[in-house]
Structure formats: structure tokens, C-alpha cells
Length: 106
Image (cartoon, rainbow, N blue to C red; front, side, top):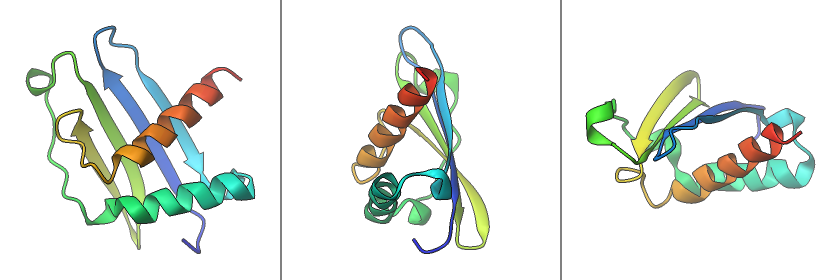
């Protein structure tokens, strides 16, 4: 991805219900992290997914994930649960969880 971009990521729910979030600006990352995030964004093909709203009733004791990403010229919001998270998006979500945990511990 050539242009700088921002990703807001939030994980909610789960057994303990502890939220975890991070706001990542691609141009604030060191080159190796930026390259990794670029590769995960491209591999996930996130901008081509359709997201449906999730409600508390359909993801009890599961994690809910929300990603807010600029796709081309528009900002899009994607919501998934553990059951609806596409396999191609899992590595991106795992990386964003790592970044959120790292930021939380700083």
C-alpha cells in the first residue's frame, strides 16, 4: 500500500469482557512493521468483505472485532465475531491484537 493509512481495531466480548483496542497509523510504524502490516492488509483482502452488524445475542462468550479502515477513497467499518471472522483476515487481526497489547503495556 503506497499511501499512508490508519486502522482502528477493537476487540470486545469474550468470557471476561475486557476490551482491547489500538489506532495504527501506517506512517508511524518502523519500516519492518509497516511492511508486515501492508502485506497482511493485502493478503486479507479486507476491503472486499461485506460486514454485517453484530449483536450481543449472536456472539456470547466470543470475541467481537471491529476494524475501521480507509479503502481507496472511503472509510469502511468491518465487524466480525470469532465465528464470522474470514480465515484470510485472521492473521491481520492477530497482528493488530499484538500491537494493541504492546501499546497497552507501554
